[in-house]
Figure (tube, rainbow, N blue to C red):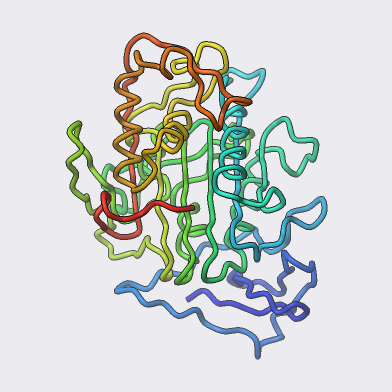
Length: 359
């Protein structure tokens, strides 16, 4: 079972990597020896299946380059947009996606600017370049010390892929992955690690929303249930819990993910929905759903996104831009639909048309 240890200086609860001799606090930078045993406490799990110990973690120190935003803000987010500039993997709209999502969170959902970590190739801080290490550290920061009432957001726009799964805990036999900037040399981040880092630690009262604009991203958070919706808006929940009984849900909190496509689909980059400013199709449709008044429930958002993807010939109303995105996004009409279907996955099953959406 994974353990928690309180920082010897500021008392922040820290997740203890197995076998670690000490741990550095992400808030005050103090190093706590594990011999400080009286503050080690086991987390309390309240699910049918207790989560297994996470894999050895590299997250035993804070993001380098100065202290990150305080992890105790009621709202905080990690936004990652990767263009893979000057490579064979180059994408056009991912940094625009990151900018648009940041604007949406700050202006529509009142996220403090200081509580958003941006990872793009255009950041001046080398520690905010979206490498595998920096993305891992940012995800760990996102959930570090979270408390009841916190709202967390992870937005990713970039390449996604799949790897053969040999443990039998994937319905389709493949792990889904995210591809950081240096994935060709450092490797991808697989869904098991994402789940262990930002899903399983979530305590009761904390909610996490992920918006993942990438190929093969349907179950990239490895959440237990997938909402399978047809074109008329009817849906059923698919059970994606591993037969082994391994728990892939939370420690009592809420975790819900919108993703750009099913696990076996690719997600369009980007000019398919805009001829002037490139953006990812999924990110564009998510923002449009919010801006056009379809953001009341999870079902209304998902239905709106899927309708927009299918009927992109309608574009953004003949070039009329939405009010919130005027400074960031200029839409244009397109021809033909896109062959991707946005997906919704969750820590639990619920009525998607009655559960209110809120960040």
